[in-house]
Amino acid sequence: MVRKRAPMTFQVVTKKTSTGTHYHARIKGGNGEIIFSSQNYTAKESAKKACETVKANASSASLVEVTE
Image 1 (cartoon, rainbow, N blue to C red):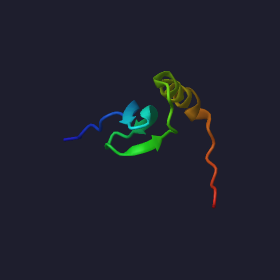
Image 2 (cartoon, rainbow, N blue to C red):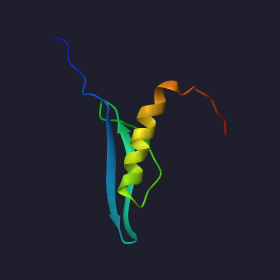
Image 3 (cartoon, helix red, strand yellow):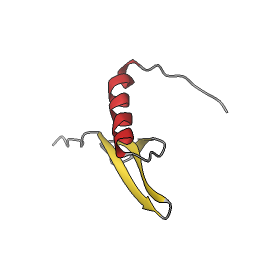
Image 4 (cartoon, rainbow, N blue to C red):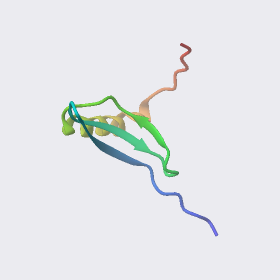
């Protein structure tokens, strides 16, 4: 029996703190692991735009190794 893996999902996360409400975008892999997380945004639409930008441009991105 071949087990199907859940699809990767783009998520907009809402966090309420004592300083206000913040949003960030993340990508969750089919195995449930978070593989990308954006900066915090004050507007939910900005976090949604981050997801759309990654979706639109990820396939043409190059891999660059960086040592810090």
